[in-house]
Image (cartoon, rainbow, N blue to C red; front, top):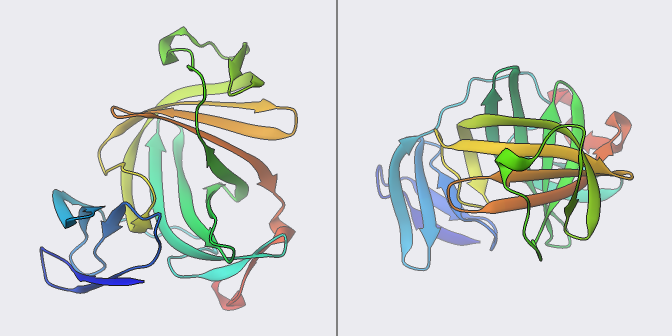
Amino acid sequence: MKSMSCPSCGAPLDIKNRFVKVVTCDFCNQVMLLSDSGLDPTGRTAKLAELPSPLYVDATGQIGGRKFQVMGRLRYQYSAGLWDEWFLVFDDGQPGWLQEDEGEYILFHKETLTSAVPPFQDVAVGRVIPIARRQVFITEKGKAHIAGGEGQLAFEILPGEEVSYLDGNSGEEQVSVEYTANEIELSVGRAVPRNQLVIDEEEYW
């Protein structure tokens, strides 16, 4: 853990994990980029409306017996509603993203793209496309924007930014591709049954 101060309000900030790249101040809601030289304010703030969820920043729990701590949350908003993605760090030090959408959960991990992904505009729902040595059946295609976030996050995406996304499946794996202005992110995961997600403080349910 690394201790720093918010450059906007001076509040203490503890950087909790080596994967962290974006930090939101709990006191002034300033969003900052973390680099070797320190914290760089982006001029953007992030304040989320509270929605019912068993998860919260700093919560601990288990998924299928694997212990984790919640580091942060991103909220995506699109034409049909919204979904949250929670940044987790497991007790072996590995990161994960838990997508929460209307009470359903998918645990994703990021993968490095080893070959080109088809341009977003060239992909159609119902088609099969090659992604990272997989044949992926595309089930959804759309655009969303980042409505806000909290805590600490592992990649540089900020409130207000637009994301183009593809969702699909390859066998039992869920595959998600996000196209942003700076990069293309590949996430691969599996659905998490509700009974496999346990929060240590059960009163939050």
